[in-house]
Image: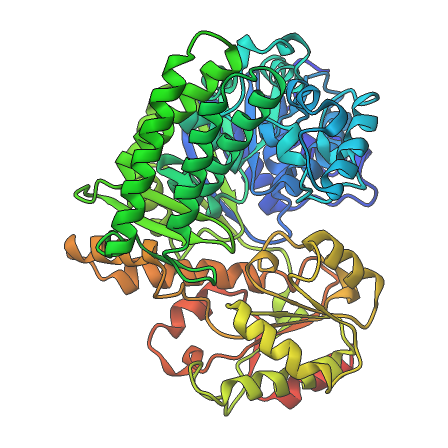
Length: 639
């Protein structure tokens, strides 16, 4: 590698990138972003960049990171983006730069086979149902050949396979250096590679989980980094808030009971009393779940604790954990596995006490239920101070980038939430010609979003768009209920394949959509971002209404109340900015390439009638606008 290559040189017409990318043409916004990142790395500063779709932000941050002398951590929004960046983009950039720098991909521990836990289930005697036993044999066969231990290698195993919790570790049940298989541990090897690498690719959940938990090994990795780059940075405030808080779930208690039963059946057959105490703890937490509606829901934990049945269930759980603690204490020192279980019991007791301290200020105490479980949450209402403290611990550079960070022409909302008051900012427009490539329509004559007639309007509008575009549509909804009703209403009206979120995995749905040229995809949150469908495969996106968060959400309610106490307007400060960013993400599915053309239809009359409409419209790309659906139909039919 040459002594010193400048970023400008790499991106020039005859530069290094042109040698590996056929038909490469320099893009000024991409060069501006790369140069800004090069400067911020030299200064150990902070930079926020909104880079419009098509800017080429991945290369714009990878190239300065590889050219810098230090170690860089790149954190992405999802595991899929993480793998794409590591397996596709990073090798291309390394080839262009003739770089010999070491790179590593690091995932969360739940992605790696735990040799010790796999050995505990030898013969499968500890597993009861046939499906899990069948999956275990698949894992065993693969375990004999894998070099990385990354369970994602098993293509025949579904993402939510029942066997995964039995053959992977958690922070709770990992024995760390006390594990008999520590020297062969795939997770330890992956982290060792990450420690030695110059560029490490992680995802936001892993970054904050390990930062908050001081997880084994990774706690040493972040201090070593000279530069941290967050892609899809708009997701960070919510993810960080989750990990800076505390949670306690009935699943943790169920897993604890399973691990005690496993130890009882395989190693310590005289701890029957402990096993019985664990089952009582499991029953107590199941009884707590029964205090709430059968259907999954969210609510205010402070309000729930005012109900007598919940109070009684919590006392029963406290007692069960106390008994479990006393019984486990008797056996401490007998077995490393049992000592780790004792620590887990201690942590569960502490978390329950914290989550039941209703006098705490500055936090939201809330719960959510699934079909079988209940999760209690303590979430800080403001992460700015905590994140700022982490940033100030070491001198390094921080880069935050996304296509959706600005609200109403500025970065104030993101800066306030993240404690980035003094960060440098850069806004780069998309290179796409939206006026020629796209049409934005808010249909005339639609009812208010909460009116009963809205359902039929959405069904009729969707039908017209599907016919005009011959499929090739995304219909995006703000709720699962509306998604379900519209998909049911369309069944008898169109012959196109309707691919509905929830019927299979996200990746499987996208594959079906690409492979069926007249298909229509109906989705909610998961499909509003992180989906890249180009060309004639996607020519129309419908959004049912402005994506304001549900007013029933307990965390939002707590933030609104906290905002009011500080004398600010929560609608302007919290609700509008969040909805703007989500809408920008949904709208961003439409135009992904310079050759793309398409129509964006937003079925919300508030975009025309309410004063805050200008904030939303100003945040969207500058498309040709119309209120006439026939204009949209003509546009689609003539593509």
